[in-house]
Figure 1 (cartoon, rainbow, N blue to C red):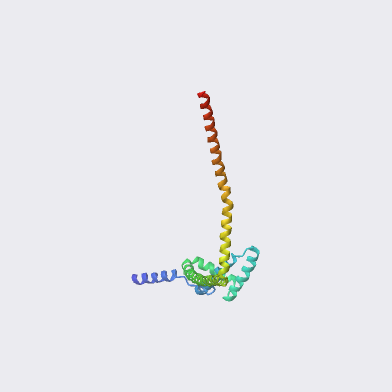
Figure 2 (tube, rainbow, N blue to C red):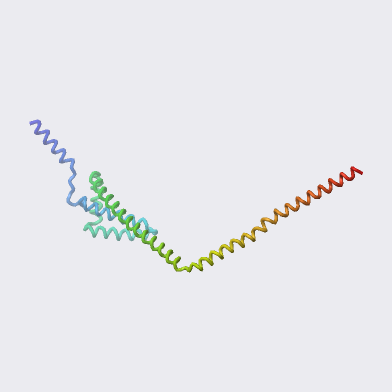
Length: 192
């Protein structure tokens, strides 16, 4: 008899611990889909610059989500409160939401990568085509002009750089010549 009582108690405890979802609460799979759409909407709304337009847009989007899933904001709030009281269920719901969001992000990243590849290929082709249209003679003339410009500018710079060096050298020679003249004159006076 004791074993029967213990088994009954154990059964009641297990049955009592499992949370049954009431009829007025949105089922977990549907709740996951609603939360996915709400999180995507929230992400979009955060990109809007004006807070006033964000509030207007968000109300419209949320109403659309509720209509899509045949529910309303009161039932959604009641369901969120229920799931908040049962974190194990909410955790399972958010695992599916997170997986769905990651899958969407990966597919968007793949599309963006393809778009980038196409744009890069188009740019490379446009550059190649524009270079092919240019006559090689014109390219040589342009290169010669550039080389001549560089040579001319270097010639303009050279005298300006060389001139001070030459002037300093001439001044040193004059000073040395003057010193030798003075020294020679001094020695001539001493000799006399």
